[in-house]
Structure formats: structure tokens, C-alpha cells
Image 1 (cartoon, helix red, strand yellow):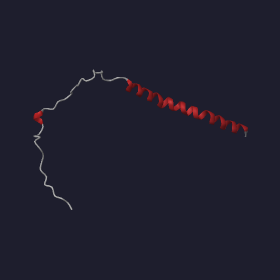
Image 2 (cartoon, rainbow, N blue to C red):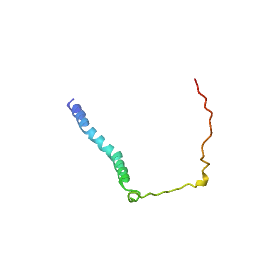
Image 3 (tube, helix red, strand yellow):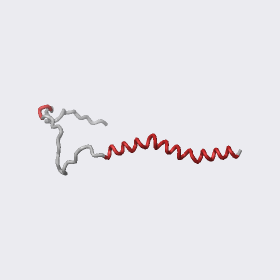
Image 4 (tube, rainbow, N blue to C red):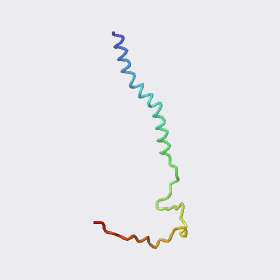
Length: 77
């Protein structure tokens, strides 16, 4: 009976730290790698106030913007 109780106590004492270590071993290292990847600057820093336009659409491609269609309004009672 004493051996059984001793075995249960040993399991209770060592299971939680072992589980925490295995979780860190499997998942924790991957999380740290992802965090480091996002902390590295990807784009070169530009001076404040500088504007960069990647794409400017051609004005001739857009339809005539003089207004819209007229929709007759009817009041609903």
C-alpha cells in the first residue's frame, strides 16, 4: 500500500513539470522563432514625410464621373 501511495505522489510531482517542458519543446520554440521573424525590419525605413506611390491608374480608364443615375423616389407610408 505504501508503494502505491508513493508512486501516486511521484506521478503528481513530476507530471506537471514534464508536461510543461514537453509543451515548450514542441510548441514554445516555434513561437519564439515566429516572434523573431516579425521583429526583424522587412522594409527599409524612409524619412518621415516621404510619399511613395506604387501605382497610379490611368485617368482615361475610368468611366465618366459627372454624376449617377437618377432614381425616382417614392415615399412609403
